[in-house]
Image 1 (cartoon, rainbow, N blue to C red):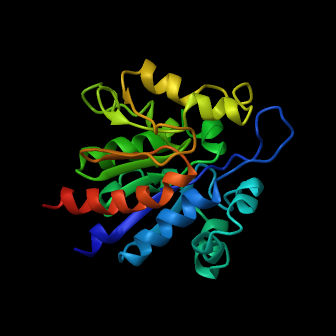
Image 2: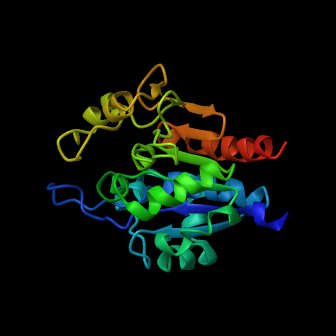
Length: 236
């Protein structure tokens, strides 16, 4: 069953935060926590991005995680970092989705710009889901799921219980005008059933069958464990 022990992390290739002049990319905690947890559960992690090659790390997320031992270790892990500096192109996995137990989209603001309408990513995610695999996304990552359309023409997330970075949290960091769309607003617009923590930055992880979502960086560890649990359940 070795085929079921691989998880594909799809990272952003985008490093510009709208017109703010600031850098963005993938968020350290939202890759480091779930990747480490899944590796410890025995999964091989494979990294891809729309453009392939080096996936840009959000510099602010490194500072935010400086006291997080798991994330610091991840950022200093040569194997992981070599993989992230040499990501596969997502399009290379079109047609090969069933080798993965799960497809995972971490956050950071980058995905808001390049993963919402990325055709190869949408295809890989739909095919994996239809092959009985788990699909997961945390923080801004769920934007990559909002356009995923299944072969019957229905949207993957329509009627599904989900979470993701809230519009209130986006306003709290004053980036509501920097992003092309507000995630919570779009999730509700496409008919997903949106849930969030009682307060901003609180932990919230939602599993609806084989769709697993987390709200924000604080939710990243629980999100990693929930991916593992959903994979286990998908096989029983």
